[in-house]
Length: 273
Image (cartoon, rainbow, N blue to C red; front, top):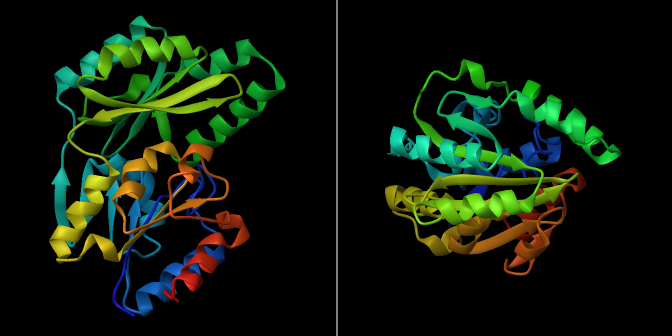
């Protein structure tokens, strides 16, 4: 078949959220697809450092920081926020009592008070979320905000206990930034803020232009609303069974979760392996 370009989100798509090692079936699918002449790319919200353990498993390039940094043979796109933009986001989130994690190219730094706030809110849901958060920070080497050195920021993740807090912040920022509200889990509202200059879909287009490939020959896999532009851009869009319900309504297909060999079986259905 004609060469396809395949774009895979990481968390909740190629791996379980917060993990760096995919099930063997997913890794095998990527190896076989590449051996068959297709090109496979990571397309993730993670920064380069957090994504590199997965990228090093063997890919043809990567889109990280939600499209802010794109590599295929060479760096194709690199667009961190300005210091003024970063400061505006920080000020708005602080003003609205929202916790944050700032992501640079080489590191991620989080408000130390967030885990303590999870403890004080209590409840079984937050206890589980706290354990998951601690695992994520350890697995992905997310550092305390006190260690942030002022390096250029590509993305800001926000965490709040009240949707109204997030909506107020969004109203103040959405003229200049993309403000994506991921949803609520364990009483915590999660979202992310990135520049309007880029998104995952624009990253896909950048790779296609570099390789002289047609968008119709692309296949993208994702699971959450920060994958929306990537899935809207790709020739074939596929959401994971464990993914966002709203996202499932707009994609071409839904496949099983990665733990259920969903990636491998989907690659088979599309004749990639």
